[in-house]
Image 1 (cartoon, rainbow, N blue to C red):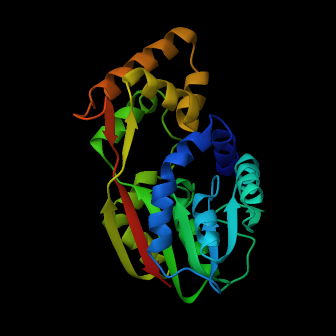
Image 2: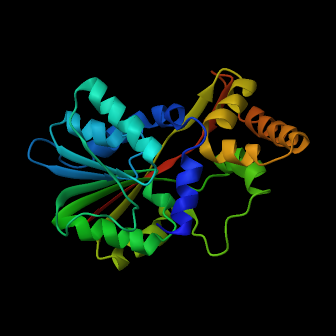
Length: 263
């Protein structure tokens, strides 16, 4: 396993990601509805996390495999599938090195997952390799957005990514993701922006939510001395408080991109 993947595994093992992933269930449902999924369809969900898309597809009768680099995520996903009696095969692997045969799946999906792969071209090539000719790709990615960027700004100002690390937001830039996927052999690449918002009853609850649950925030805060940690929390609170909406105390717009393609 690469050093970058080891870092990713350590990062995504922190925080309390199920609380984050629970907010994405609506996104997962939209992804499943974007292509024809049902009995007889084989589907691979890459960087499956806690299995939102994998489970949604399996409920439709698809034969589903979920892949993730983080053992803790796979454990949580497996517990969900066992509790609900929904059969899914879970595999530990990197997005850029899938231990799966060529031309295996009718559909490949990834919800806010493959976008964090440290080698984007290699990951895109793997998505294409395991798809059957004529198969469909469905990816959910974050759209670069000023409001969302303010929520992670206090962290990013203190923790720069390693030199040469790709920007996950590139998967939410239509021109860049189109070029990436076409370079991997995909055709008919389409992108569509979709609305999403983080809603909380007040700013303090929002700060606690991100600080305790988001793997990025949790890892970054843990690495700081106490005094600096308090400064970051206050910066985060100020950024969140500015996003107050008319009907709820805090509403942070965070649009996402539905990316579809055909092999």
